[in-house]
Image (cartoon, rainbow, N blue to C red; front, side, top):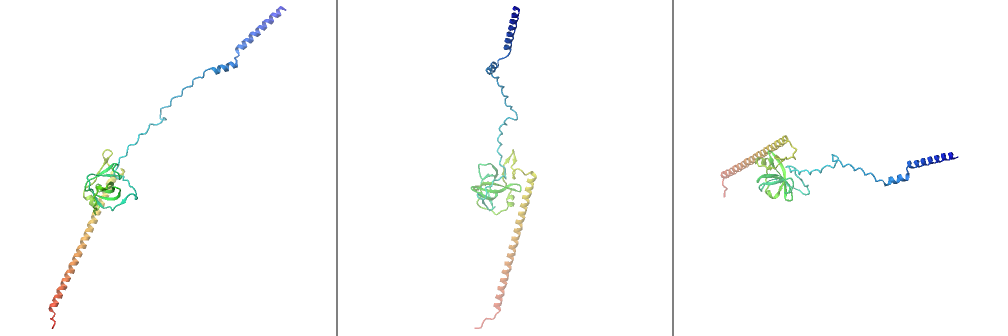
Amino acid sequence: MARQQRWTAVVSTGLMVGALLACKKKPDPAAEASAAASAPAAPATPAAPAATSAAAAPAATEAPAATEAKLGDVKRYGVDKEVKLDDAGVRVSADELKVYNEADTKTDDVATLPKGLLVFRQVKMADFTLVEFPSGIGQFSQGWVETKSLSDTPEKVTRAAALSEKKTAAVKVVDGGTPAATDGGKASDAGAEKKADAGAAKAAADKKAEEKAAAEKAAAEKAAAEKAAEEKKAAAEKKAAEKKAAEKAPAKKK
């Protein structure tokens, strides 16, 4: 009986120790949740800085340099503002007259005209006149000049006559010494030579036409003079014949 009680006590003690060990090993869910809530959050990894590569915003583009004015890039203002002129030749009355692509002295000048140069007026707008002037060998260009610097007396001359005077504009150079092109800079040297040849041919044709007209006029004047002389001679002969006949006729009887 005593032995049985001892075994019962041993077994009971073992069960209690096992229960205690089991409770110690098994975690409490509520405690775990509480621990998780109180644990500080892990610091966030900082984002990588934006790459400074070609994908970044491009640098500001520099503003393009202002385009230099070139002879021949003439601005027109339309028929509602321009008054058409007679294409008559007039003389430059001012020294070093500036030529502009626009009817505005605040813009860049493209050429300078010497005093006495023969130019041909095209249209007028406000205080400016668009003229065509000798700008090289056998060629003309257009540009705006101040009307007050032109003579008021038109001359009936041809462009060939203007070229024969051997006066020409001083064209402003651009691009480090290159003369401004008369066609916006697109003409090649061959094109310029071709234009010069065409101008020379036109001048020769105008001169030939003038010579022919002068010869025809001289011939007509000569024929008129010869006819007048013949008529005068015939009248003189008739008068002499009448006088002779009157002398031969017998006097009338009283």
